[in-house]
Length: 348
Image (cartoon, rainbow, N blue to C red; front, side):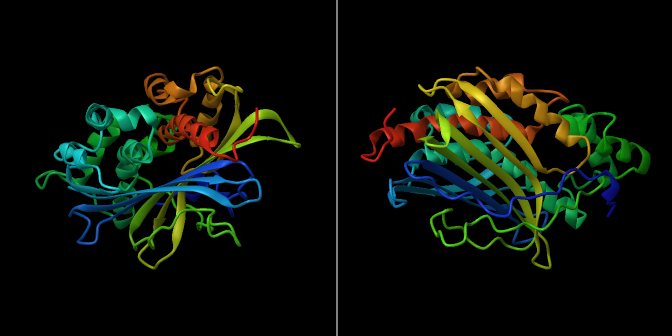
């Protein structure tokens, strides 16, 4: 396994999630992907999400949960899926490639969930990215999914050619591609140990998650919408956190990607007014260059972020994982709706 610590990116993971603010709303999600029957067998997905509103004295005034269980074949075909609460239309996604085109097909089958940006939509929308990142487990294990008659070196070369200049980390002059060109194999990023994100003394800081299996990946997100307080001049602020992690065969969980995105929308929750992005953990030295793309979010319509970021944030000035973090900000809309209908909603 080729490791290049001298080419590693930032390694400063968050040690804990911030405390829930009075009158705020929080959305949290996780997608765990494991291969219990071996690296060349089906992936098993355990995806969970929760919305929570915190009242004026710190109490939870609203809780809503959503779970998805799924299986994905080595070729990324969705072969089994069910949810709680149940959604019968999910079976129409069976046979879909959990990759390009998945979100479009999901939108056609579940337009109502897309329109209200439900928890189910949040998980399904993030599933292609989580499935892509689950390949890190194969990289750490020294295996890849490829046709049986194709050499591993040729399979990876094909992948490199398809991914060139996709983002800052995959630029043609960046660590991944240059190393492959020189050494004939991919370098493997080794991130720092993953601190617990659950806040001590607050069992509601995150939703309940199953223990992460060994040799499995976890993608988790948190989005807080916070009303004006004495120390915050803006009508609203947001605080979003994203982490990809991997638990190795010995049981140690390490961070692969981690970003924090903070800022403010306008008072009507129509557009982004301010945004700040921090790269906490990234694989390679080139990756943090993508942080500058966050300035392009200013004045973007929040309700259209999922579409506009996917269409406009492309190339080596961006990061695919940071783009997904930007797209997740669209979920400020349903959090704003939740606060508006709660008896403890802030006055504006």
